Image 1 (tube, one colour):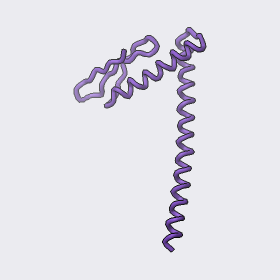
Image 2 (cartoon, rainbow, N blue to C red):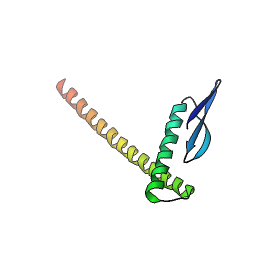
Image 3 (cartoon, rainbow, N blue to C red):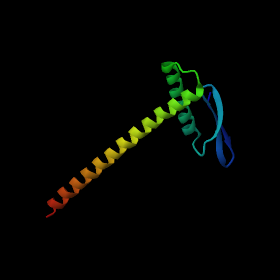
Image 4 (cartoon, rainbow, N blue to C red):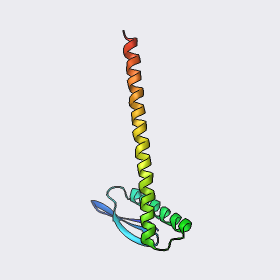
Length: 102
């Protein structure tokens, strides 16, 4: 289903299949990464097709893109909250260390 075709000293070209269509994608140095992304898109499209019963592949692709965008936005927000928490903990630790050295 997913095949890497390395090219000498150039980004590799990866053949991926998404929802029954084959695409040739430049993968840069990490063909496996592109293959995993394509598999995720394929999984999303197949899940939407099963659950929504939609048959129009364009509609399924748009709904999959919305699902993936939602997933991405949620993860970015989670990362932002974790960065703020880490910064707060670092500041608290700094205060404790400074107070302990006085």
